[in-house]
Amino acid sequence: MHSGFGKIGEASVGGVEIIGVDGEAYHSTFYDSFGNVHRARLEIEGDVIRWIGDRARCRLLLTCLVCDRSDSWDTPPPAR
Image 1 (cartoon, helix red, strand yellow):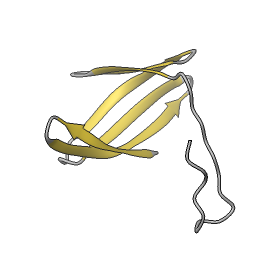
Image 2 (cartoon, rainbow, N blue to C red):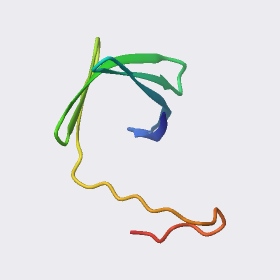
Image 3 (cartoon, helix red, strand yellow):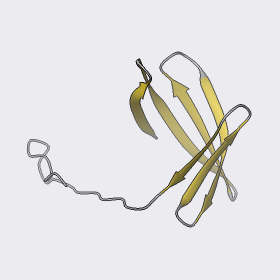
């Protein structure tokens, strides 16, 4: 599960996505900030993730993912 927020034009948008697996198939359910629910099939091939829904399609190319952790919630990890 993860959240995402941003802007489309001047409109602030966001929501929460839950990704599930059924056998070898991945599915996404996204609840947006307008009260809509979007469902899509996920296809993952190498460093490309595709969301394929009834009315929308999206492709994400993963080129670099950096994660840091902090031993204290009071001290954020260094910026990159």
